Length: 214
Image (cartoon, rainbow, N blue to C red; front, side, top):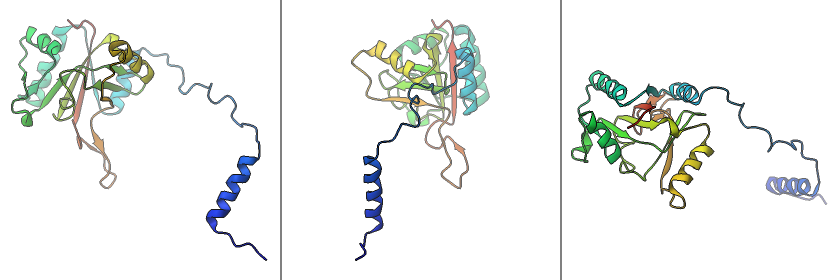
């Protein structure tokens, strides 16, 4: 009498048979092989290339004066009026150069620009690692149409694992409850496969790498 089996039973039977048969691993050295080609570029060049490839903007500044000059040019270009900054270190930095900004969340629904620090810059994929640990919290990097990140050269690392090592070194066991990587402006292609920037967050991302941030 011919055995009647369903398609599901046939598949499970094949799986059981395959599990019982011992086979040599066709890729014995896979785990030891490098995931990426060895990087030979300077980290700031690699980061800039990868960031611009995902429609981000990279600006290198030698010092605070260079940064303020670039900020004034951007403010004039985009007609910025509602610029928000909540982190005390950044507020002192901007106030030193008498750059205007909002220190509180008053009229935040009208915010045009959010200026924040970051945890690290990941050169391999042009990503900005942020957390909710600072005074900027979760909102300032997400809500305004333009997000400006200020980073030190010491925060520039090659891979994600190096970024997490910086977090561990900084916070120890008190790891922030929210850690995220921003790779270029917010984007979606859900509607008719057409790429739209700024769909769920900032439509422009500017990363300032400052060599002498004081």
